[in-house]
Image (cartoon, rainbow, N blue to C red; front, side, top):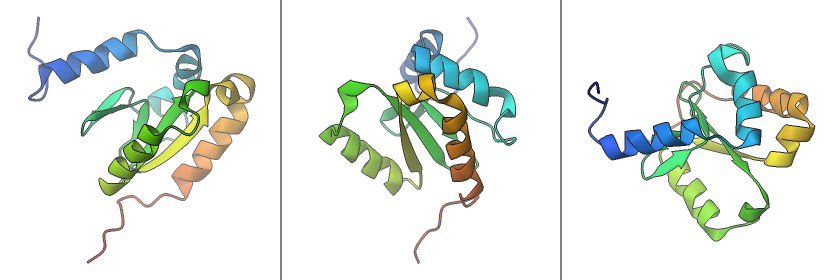
Amino acid sequence: MAALRGKDQKRTERARSLRRTPAPAEFALWTRIRARQLGGFKFVRPEPIDRYYVDFVCRKRRLIVELHGGQHAEHRQDKQRDNDLQALGYRVVRIWDNDVIENLDGVLKSLLSELDNSPLTPSLSP
């Protein structure tokens, strides 16, 4: 087996495992945003950022897209996770799985709007 990128092989393997077994909504969204299909923006999936694995991220616009089913309704851990990722300069957009399945075109329009209104780099306070 070839050498893995980065220092943490365990995290890399975990991300690869998540990529091999996407949920139906993740697969549906990925087929429409992969290979720069959405406005020319590049997304990667599941990606380790800090101590988290995010569903999708556009690194150039520092936009994270998280898909969720009912198990994530107003979870305290999700709020902490969002705060931690925002502290690293990312914006987090949460989308319900059923919205992806039932209204994928609407989800894509919303994401494109988020991307178009995102700065190329995060604004940092002096």
